[in-house]
Length: 283
Image (cartoon, rainbow, N blue to C red; front, top):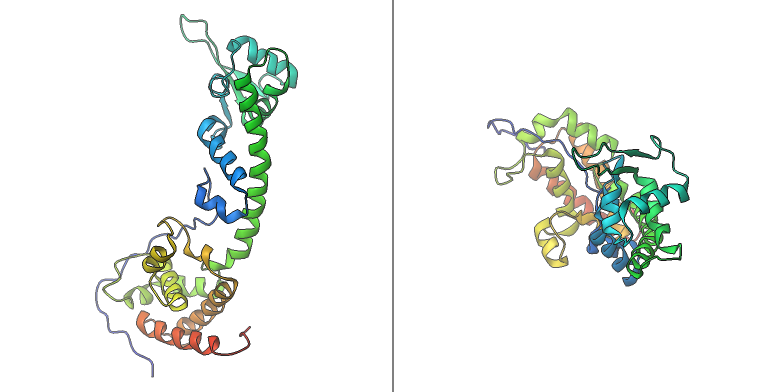
C-alpha cells in the first residue's frame, strides 16, 4: 500500500546541482593516487604545481613573461632572455605574444605570452646549452617531466571519469522525475534532512541504500575528504547497482507516484537486498 504524503510544511527550495567529477585546477595528492601514477610522477606534478603557478593560469589567455622568468629562476636579464626565446621559437608579435606599455617613467616593459607558447618556452629554456644555469636546467627538466606525467594523469582520469559518469544522477528517467516532481519530492523529505538540494538528497538516499551507512560514516571509515565524490571509491558492482537503482527509483516516482523519501528508501533497500542475494545480476 502506498503511503500518501501529508506534509503541509512550506516546500523546500532546491539548489542547482553542480558535479565536481571533472575538476579543474590543481590536482591533490589524494586525487593523483586514483590515476595509477607512480610516487615519482605524483611528486613531479605536485612540485610543478608548487613552483610554477604561473603556468597553471588556465583561465587567462596570456601570462606574464616576467613572472615566468622569475619562476623558472633564469639568471640572464629578462629583456635579453625573452627576446632570445621569441627568436628561437619564431613567435609572432600580436599573435603569440603582446608587448605591454612601459610603466610611466620606468621604461620597463613586460611581454604577455600565450599560455601554450609559455609552456613551450619553459620546456626548452633549460636545454639550450651555453650559459644556461643549473637552476634553469632543473626547472626546465621539471616542466618536461611534468607534461609527461600529466598526460598520463589526464588519460587515466578520463578513463576513470568515463567509467563513473553514470555514478552521478545521469539516468535520464530519474533526472526527469526530479525535475517534474520537484515540489512533491521536497515535501516528502523528512524534517531531519536539512539539505535543500533535491539532487543531493536523492544522491545520498541511493548511497545509503548501497553502503548501508551514511556518507559521513563512509567518509570517516575510508578517510575521504568532504569535497571528494565518495562514488569514486565504489567497486564496479556498486557502480552497476547505482545505475540500476536510479532507474528503479525513477519508476517509483513517475509510475507509482511515491514521493515519500522514507517509503522509497525502504522499497529501494528491499530491491537492493533481493538482487544482492541472487547469483546473477539484474540487467
